[in-house]
Length: 102
Image 1: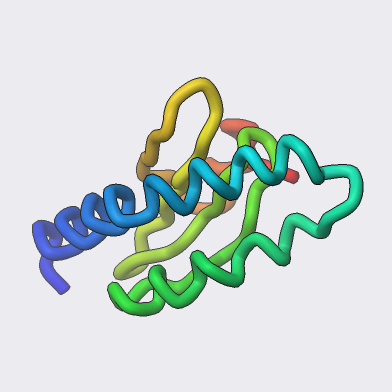
Image 2: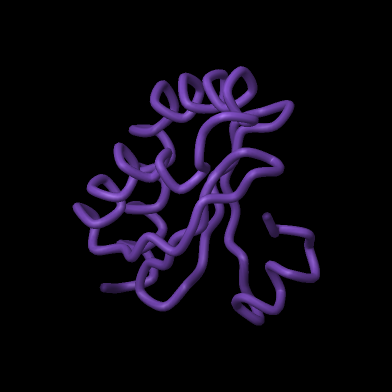
């Protein structure tokens, strides 16, 4: 996968998941005391895999998830805004430094 193909796939996933993520974030706000965050991966994981990505994990705050695509980590999240970003240069350590934790 070229860099441009990776960027295009990440952008498409972000756009394709907007409604799903908005719904799941609202549900999580209402049910976080009773539900397991990992159960929220069920509708997300197949869409990540369909673009050749690897689902890494769900994130509680801000609600979202991390995935890997062609060796690059991304986070899609719903906080004040729906957004995504690349979690590199240092992979999981960078994510940890930036507070992308459960």
